[in-house]
Length: 92
Image 1 (spheres, rainbow, N blue to C red):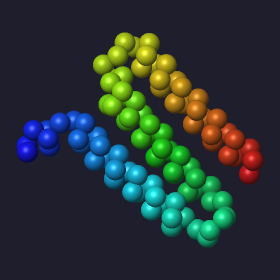
Image 2 (cartoon, rainbow, N blue to C red):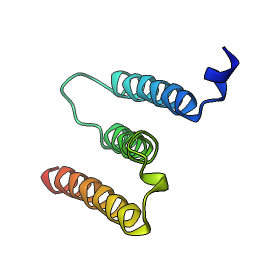
Image 3 (tube, rainbow, N blue to C red):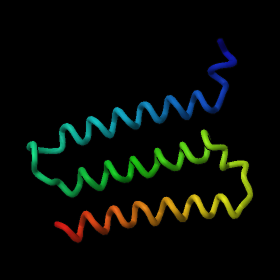
Image 4 (cartoon, one colour):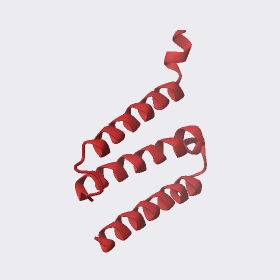
């Protein structure tokens, strides 16, 4: 049983689960239904970006990959969430 607790993937999985619950709670308590709340949206998108980075690095094993792949995946993540933020604030 202790080998499971020492496995870094179990810890990352537990963190992802906790952050998912926190994100859901933030979005649920963020205001009235069908009303946009910029603060809640930014928080939830930032949590999603962190979760995406954790999945890429730990479950896709990019943390042990060559530098070019680390830079490419991080750049893709920044571009993706930059576009999401840009579209959200341009539409509002």
